[in-house]
Image 1 (cartoon, rainbow, N blue to C red):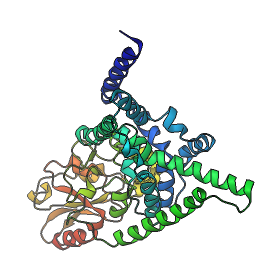
Image 2 (cartoon, helix red, strand yellow; image 1 turned 180 degrees about the horizontal axis):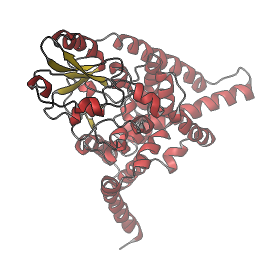
Image 3 (cartoon, helix red, strand yellow; image 1 turned 135 degrees about the vertical axis):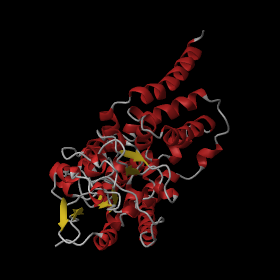
Length: 401
């Protein structure tokens, strides 16, 4: 077998082996750290959340390397770029007229950064690092794998199109290098700036303004669905969550209680694959804040454990007719397990009955009471609906002396 053919066979074997290895043995630490290297995710997260956290700190060294050498990350470190390049080398050389297409990736980057100024970034899901970590291991393999397969198909049919014209991370690196060239040219030539250099600030202005204006309009739209889902503690408001979350699945993998799941049945497509809390296997642990630590975009705030426990997932609501106390059966395990002292037993001297009362100020919706309740008479509702449901629950509670 000739040398070039051997290399082609080796590339095909590695291309097949890479997703298999990733699916079966993807390290949790790599899933958390890899997206944090993206300057696109880091800068957008900082603009949208108005905070400088670990996401931006991880992207700063990579930004320095990008300024030193154009597309450094794409050339040496990007796993999606390696797959795309391999597919391009395997594919026959077709007509390459598509390479004259405009750089749509740059437009997506500027539009996203402009939207982030109004807390509604748009194209974070297209970041290749988020796409790779999402495809490499969560319970929703098919959804993430489908997106990754789309990149592979584009690379096979149109070699170079994804990396050169569509990838937002690559476009972000090009923009950084272009700005560096403009600054250097201004210093060396005074005010004499070429036509190519003038277009860079113009693109920046138009893209940022367009994204910010569109985000301001989107921010006024109502969120679809009457019943809001439970989000992890420290999650952004629903509209910002839908825009800021990159659906990488890092929080799902990081949760030791396995109560976070990608939402496969949202009321509308904007909520697809967002993390939702389901208390089927346990509850939110008081000594854990891993979901915020794992989030690369700031959709879930990275908080100390004590502050995380103060953030409300929702509010526990008791169905008194199903409660064992209403059947005159001694129980009270929910009050015993609540570490915040949010659950009380009230006794009525008139009816000589006991009932459960939940303090909305203390309850953070961790779900510990839900999991231990024998008749499953406790549910946790979203924090935005908690006030109304609490009023109904208080009105239906038996009178207490």
